[in-house]
Image (cartoon, rainbow, N blue to C red; front, side, top):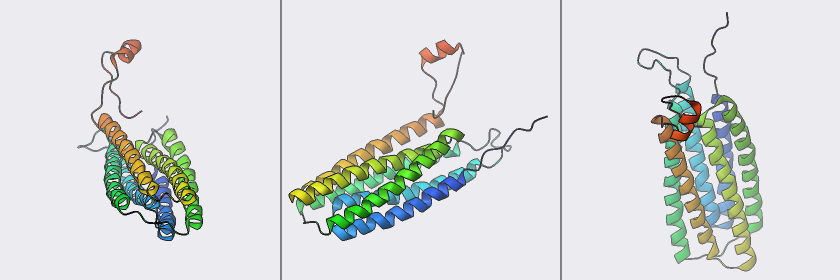
Amino acid sequence: MSQSKGPVDLRRYALISIAAAITTILLKGAAWWLTGSVGLLSDAIESFVNLAGALMALWMLSIALLPADAEHPHGHDKAEYFSSAFEGFLIVVAAVSIGYTAIDRLMHPLPLEAVGVGLLVSVLASVVNFVVARVLLRAGTEHKSITLEADAHHLMTDVWTSIGVIAGVSLVWLTGLNWLDPVIALVVAANIVWTGWQLMRRSASGLMDVALPRSEITQIGAPRITRGFQ
């Protein structure tokens, strides 16, 4: 007679994400310090959000491992949705911070320094995020973990953001149009807000057990079906 398996311990992936966040904070912080670019600063700030999100993910994944009890007969799996919602909130807070800094720099533009070295360091940080995001996404899909999937999608957003920032700062470097630097940061902030909103919306959907669309219920033939994050 086979025994049912308990929840899979996914905390090692959260630890990988934490290590990657610390690494990219150091790298992107160095890139900003070398260049003085507010665009690269915005990229570095998002890595602090990555770290906070990864720490929250570790906590929620630990809670999700707890067995069912009298007060939680269905287990603690939905704790993961709180992690995703919290990460979405942090992303929005980071975007506000980036926007404030960018507007100040737009009003008081400054020339960039040591751009070549700074960009190389930023590229290295993006490679780290890309590799870790792929690992987390594969694990999240395999184990149906919203926490890992949310963390992976956030890291991939960070990668694309970094690519845009690197391209923009390179353009500033080549053209000498210093006002482009804070404009790039504002675009980054807007993109981050969208990502944060999507994470919070999908987390709320999972927590509330939002019903499937009527067309899907009709196809399945079930009177009432609910879903979480898919």
